[in-house]
Amino acid sequence: MLRAKLPSGIELDYIDEGPRDAPVLIFLHGFPESHRTWRHQIAHLSGRYRCIAPDQRGYRGSSKPPAVSDYEPGKLIGDIFQLAEVLGVESFTIVGHDWGGAIAWGVALAGQASGKVTRAVIANAPHPALFQKLLCTDPVQRAASQYMREFRDPANDALVREHGLGGLLLKAVKWERSSKLEPEVRDAQFADWQDRDAAFAMLNWYRASPVVVPSMDEPFGLPDGWQDPPLPPLTIPTLVIWAMDDLALPACNLDGMDAIVPNMTLYPVHGCGHFVIWEEPEAVNAAMDAFLGST
Image (cartoon, rainbow, N blue to C red; front, side, top):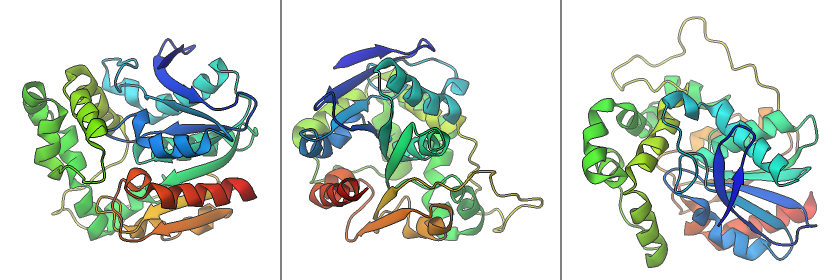
């Protein structure tokens, strides 16, 4: 692992593979993973692209500031631009999954006008202009997101202190080992979850998010005075990869996305759950090959 100290003082561990003069891809992992989640894509692409994958703020050996406010989305987005600056990267394609995809949407929206971000690849991560509306109006998405209320509830902190992050995952999302996760990667992930400081830092991503998750007994519908987020369309070439059997983020998240991402290529992956990038890596690699080769 390499380590970068950002102008903000945050330090991020990262890997940097591939030719230094090749087009740059910056990969952002989701919860509760690490840079390792992109292992199949980086192995496939690093002969042709410079592949940079950090352990994001709060994860593994990267900085873990203590306050919930240290994990506000704007700061997480800022980390990526600062990392690119420190590494001398003038422009890049942003690639993200899950929470990393949520941050990738923000990075792409913030960086498209300047040319800093030239393309985006998003896997199973809701668009910020659509997700809150779904939580208000769609029973399926609201039910699927109730685990976020558990992650935010300080009543569960004692469970995390006693058992690490794994204890809360078992309670909130009935976490099970996937047969498609290599034993050595699984064991490394379980070891990461025992770090109590990292566990609370990872949960702070949820606790700092402005997204409101209503309970199931609250009424459905948009609240009085609802206004759509003041976000511009994302006009750079964007590949959206979506595992269609994702229980946490069902395919309703795609409804209306083409209107606000007009240069979007959609690649659905059927018969696959949330962790599409390592559950179906060959499909993801093929989709990225076609997209990167044509844009």
